[in-house]
Length: 254
Image (cartoon, rainbow, N blue to C red; front, side):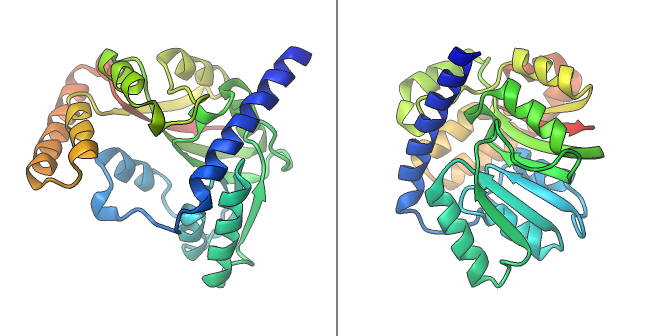
């Protein structure tokens, strides 16, 4: 146990340092709906009406999701391991006159300091793979109310082309993050038996990679939209291919 705690603390320190550097000089920025891919659009739709709900923004970053949730009528708690991101999130909430609707705290996802059965909804975007998943998921289950829901959108790493891409672009991610495998999803199922997994990005992993390299090339954007449509049809016909996709949206119900 002592060794596990030491390894966890070391990992948290690495993640904190990486994200402090990432957010230190960044400007508050919200993703544009026009630029959201089909996976993220689907993920946003799953949350439904959030008014009057207690919501945990798990890995809140600069707070843009929390701001959006608060404006939609939710009471929000945002946590992140980075002090720099929390500073920016608090400042943004203050500028939007939403400080009474959102509470931001520096906190690792494996050690959530809130009461059992407290949240109606937990949300996270590309964050679980920065944590020790076995600990984080248990904490998420604990703080959710019975009947509550957790929604996550996460990168996958079982496709050989994704593994090559990650090896070639190490600067795009923190040293300790680990994209999800199907084994991780099976573990999450042990904690949340009521789980639904939605996969995105089979052929479109190639077009999305090209868009990252060549930015907003109109022809590539068109190809990407076409590839996403082909993926949708393919995965409906052969769902077993899901584990080789680039993105998974997880809907976890307690």
